[in-house]
Image 1 (spheres, rainbow, N blue to C red):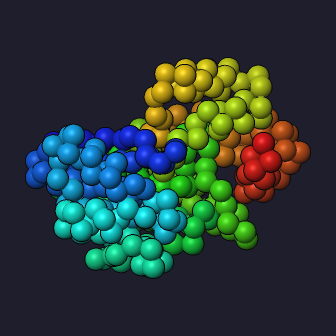
Image 2 (cartoon, rainbow, N blue to C red; image 1 turned 180 degrees about the horizontal axis):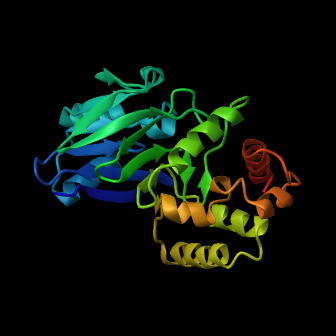
Image 3 (cartoon, helix red, strand yellow; image 1 turned 120 degrees about the vertical axis):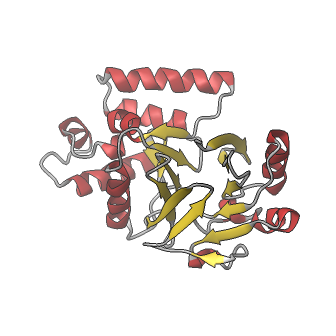
Length: 254
C-alpha cells in the first residue's frame, strides 16, 4: 500500500511534512520547524507521529523536535551533528537504512548546505526527502568551501529515476523560477513553470514537492552542463561543477 505524504507550510516558508503508512499506522514527521503546527497537522489527519526524520542540524528544521517527541514518544533519527540541537534516539549516516512501514529508506550523506546533511531515499516508494539540498527549481545555499560537495550531492540526486518525488525543506519556488527564467529567457518550459509558480503564489498554494524529471527540465542547477546556462554565467567549456558554482553565486546575488 503506497505511503501517504502530507506537505504543508510552517514558519514563513518551511515545509512541514508527514509521511504515513496506512498498513501499519506509522507516521513520520520530516524535520519539525514548528512543533505546534506539526502536531496540529497530524491531529487533523488523524495520524499519530511515531517517528521523526531529521535531515540536518539547522534550527529551522530541528527546533520543534524535542516538543513533538515529548508529546508523542516518537523515535528520532538524524545526523550526528544534529545531536546538539535536538534529541536523537538513533544517529544515522551514509550507508545506513531506516525501515518505515513496509518501505526502506537509504541514508545518503548529502553535504554542501550543512556538513552532516542527510537525504532519506526510498527507491521502492520513489521518494527522496532531500531537505535543503534541492528545492523546486533551485538548491540550498552552500556553505563556504563546500561547492564541490554540494555539486556531488546534487549530482547523486539527479541520477535517481525521473519519477522519483523530491521533497524539499522550503518553498522558494517563485524566486527560483524567476532566477531560472533570467538565466534562460528563451526557454518556454521554464517560462511556463514561472507562470505556474506565480499562480501558485497568488492562490496561496504551498509548493515544495517536485520530481527528478521536472527538475531536469527546469532547474538550472540540474542543468549546469547546458551550453545556454554556461553562457549565462560566462563559463562556456567549463566543467559542469564550475558552471554550477557560478550559477549558485549568481543566485546569491539575484
